[in-house]
Image 1 (cartoon, rainbow, N blue to C red):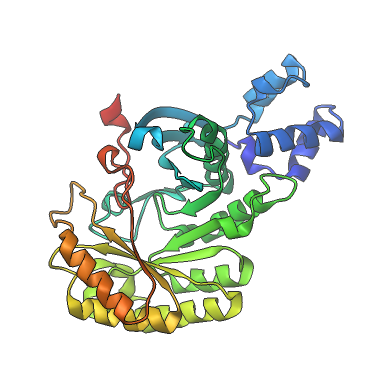
Image 2: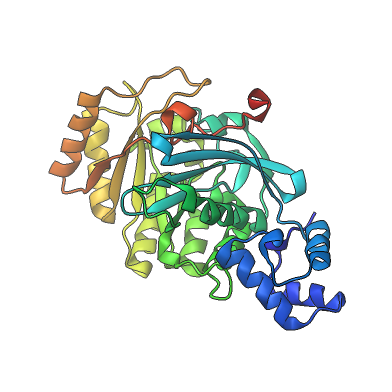
Length: 349
C-alpha cells in the first residue's frame, strides 16, 4: 500500500486534484505532515470528509505496536508497523543534553551476516521504501516533545544505524534523504544526517556523489583482513584497502571527517596489535574512532571487552594521533543499544 510519505509534493497535488481539491490544499497538508508531524485528525483546517478519505486512501502508515523507555525516559525504543502493516522495525529516540537523535532502520533484518549483531542474526526480510524510512523520522519529530526537559525536546539529528545496511538499500535510502532535506518538506539540514555502513564500497562512492553533506560512519570492528573477514563477511568482497580508498575519496571530496565504529569484543579484536593497526588507518583517513563495548545478543556468546582493556585500546589510538571516544551505551537494558535491535513483537504481545 502506498502511504502519504511515499509521495512527493507534486504527486500529492496530482492525487488531490483528481479528488477535486485545489493545489494549495496539497501544499497545506504536505507541510503539516512533514514539518508539524501532524496526523490528519489534527488538521483542523481541512474537512472531516477529506480527513477520512486521506486516512483511507493515503494512510500515514505508522503504527506504534510497543514502546519501552530507559535512561529516565531519555531513551525510547518503539516497535513501529510501517507501510500499511507490511513491515515492522525498531526505532530508537535518544535525548542528550545538547541534542536529540533518532536511530532509524532502512531494512527489516540485514543480510550482512555480522554474527555479533542481533539484526544480522535475523537475515534480510525486506527493504523499506523511502516513505517508510522517512516516516520513522516524522514519528521521532512528533515524539521528541515528550522527552524529559533535560533534553532539547526537538529532533536535531538522524542516524541510519538501526536495522539493516543502508547502502544495500541505496536507492530508497537516497530518496529518503532527499525527502528529509526537502525545503518544502521535513527541512532537515543534510549535515544533521549520518549514514552508517559495514563497508559497501560502491554505496560509499554513490553517497559521496549524491549526498556530499551527509555524514559517514563505517563499522570496522577489525583492522586486518583476516579478522575482518570473520567478523564482517562483506570484507571478503570489499577488503580494507578498497574500503580505505573509498573513504579517503569521500573525505577529499566532502572535506568532512568520517567516523569509524568499533565494537569492543573480549579477546577477539581488542588487542594492542589491532589498536595499533587501527590507529594507522584512522590517522591516514583523519577519522574519529568510536569504541563501543559489545552489547549482549542471544546468538553471540562472546563478552564485551573489560573496561580497562577498552581504556588501554583508546590510549594506543590517542598515542597514534587519533581522536577517539568511548561510546556512552544508551538503552542497553531495553535491547536498544548498538547491535541489539531485533524484532521482538511476538514476545511483547
